[in-house]
Length: 239
Image (cartoon, rainbow, N blue to C red; front, top):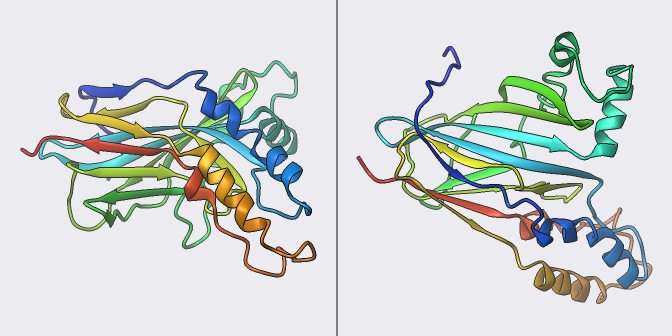
């Protein structure tokens, strides 16, 4: 596969810039720590603004998904300093530096799902590892993209559900960048936000049932990432 995707019409869901739910996500660690008698609880350390492009062929099948990750300022600074990039500190990378940076987050261990779960008619969609990794910076933040190919049987893009999340919640993914469909112009995109207040209340209620001496590092830490994930649904007409 050449990896080149022909340009076609796109259906787009605009990024909800400034949506209060995303600002609130960054306060979750502090709220949890304030409410609990112990601090060893899962909470985000890296924040990523996410965008998705669903690529649908002429037969109405999903063929690829292009993922955009925009890292928070602090994590971006750590990576750039570690790789000795942007030495002049202007927040802009040269072409050579972009080539060096490309793929730094595409070295996945076996079994890693790329923090992305896609369902078609409630069945998991098998995706390749990252292809065509690219990287740049925007206002000092690292922004990367990678392409993932749908593997196995054709997947009709009639009832797709996508959730970007890290189940351990070490990384918090927020769908603040554009979500688009490249293909049939009549495809529909809907988004469903998590009930942040409700999920926090349930988490707090559960953790408060534990003894103050309970060691979360030696026991199973609740996997809460999906509970805070935005769901994107895509529906394209059958052809």
